Figure 1 (tube, one colour):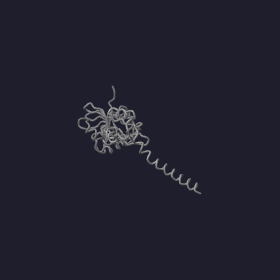
Figure 2 (tube, one colour):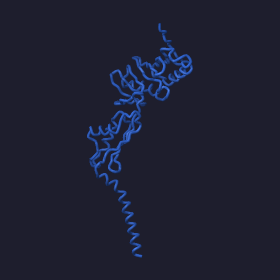
Figure 3 (cartoon, helix red, strand yellow):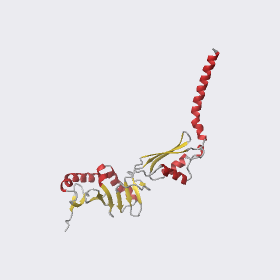
Amino acid sequence: MLKKIFKILFAVAAIGYALFAFAIVPNLGNDGKCKGVLVEITDNSLDAISRKDIIDILVGEELDPSGKPMEEVLCRDIESLINNISLVKECQVYKSTGDYVMIEICCRKPIMKIFDKNGEAYCIDKDGNIIHGIQNALFLPVASGFIDKEIASKEIKDIAVAIDRSNFWKAQIEQLYLNEKKEAILVPRVGNHTIELGTADDIEAKLEKLSTFYKKALNGIGWNKYSKINIEFTDKVICTKREKQK
């Protein structure tokens, strides 16, 4: 009888110790050294940033936690550094189980490439944020002309957002040029003509009007009949016929 009671008490004690050890081991692990950095990147549509890029940035700023005691790892400093990258929308850094540092990054989505009047090149997202350092933006529409960062974040952003919302216009619009009067000229991929958009005001209505004109007119008479299509004015589409070559 006593042996049976002793066995029961021993089993209960063993289970209790196991539960206690399981609960405290992850915390005790923080007294060890960091085994490395785990990086998870989402919304990285252009593969514009990689784990190697993040590690290189940490090494350059002497914030790489690898090999350091976990208690000395400065998660907030790492977070602040990465959040200063223009491509990064949001970053979270925390100590993970097993003595690793976890970095979770959500990227901004570039929707247009800008070559501005000051000779700078960058992209913008749907909120007008300026994004530097994107090299492989080959499939984005390109904007140039009398553009600075303020105009890029406002007027150009409005046009870029309207284009990005439509699969048709994303495939159709290749370039945008802004003149001194802030009037935009669009260059399509299909059709040997330019589109005189005017200002960014009522951009959605203008593109809808142009879409209707494409379907009802150009599909019937040909996409190369006109050299210019002006959609600047309400309820009007003004076309300039292409001059016949002599």
